[in-house]
Picture 1 (tube, helix red, strand yellow):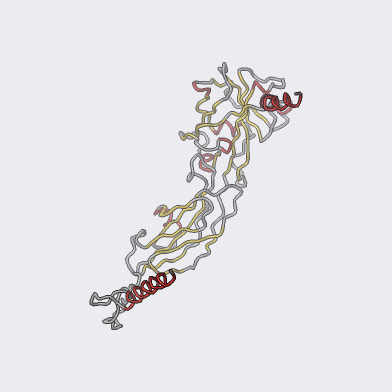
Picture 2 (tube, rainbow, N blue to C red):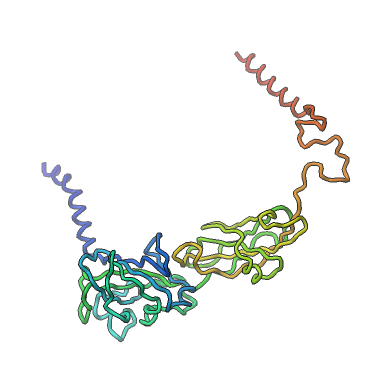
Length: 329
């Protein structure tokens, strides 16, 4: 009986233990909107990229507080990853682990959200680095203390939340092409080895220009795109509006994931070019120097429209199979 009772209580105890652990964890706040774009993907991988950093004073973002019933204002601090800004010793002037944002406290509006914080305010703390070109996904955090200034106290876990974000101002490396430098035909393939970047590469881009000039290709814009784990893009002469004999120079680039939406991350430099020369695909017996009076576009049909030897061969095989089945009965 005792064993049966313990068995029945096991799920309940598990839930209670899980709840006690959860109560001891930091509350997960989140940056939910950057520069007018709402985040719809993993809020644990929020990025500010080189484009944001170049316009830090005008880049606005919203911070949404979770488990914030009754919270009317919040005191915001910027911290490095795992800064422990809830502990007073990490909020001193002698360290750059945690620093307060100017303008505290901030008003918590509808949906528990603080609107229109600027990226520049994070940078001004001296904690967040937006100029180091070696940064590839450096993690930081925003601590939001509920209602009261943390002062010189250690803050209980129920009285603050932490929102993670990253800064990546480093574009992926230049792609190294693995295809032929010159291609002739009706379609052209640009292939590459995977670039070096500590973050994922969710997008690759293909560019085209009439000259071997990356600037001219960029000015013309993207002609094709592909996604994660791809190492090749293909464009046809029709796609590129090329007549037979016309040439095109093709370039590829990688775009990292440091963005609110895929495609807005840091873009690496264009690769070296591959030259594509448009040529019509040769059809059956297209050579004008060859007598094709006995040729056919199909081995099953002769030029006069009568069945060729190929179709008689197929009929013979069908009859043989049918006869073999009858004999096997």
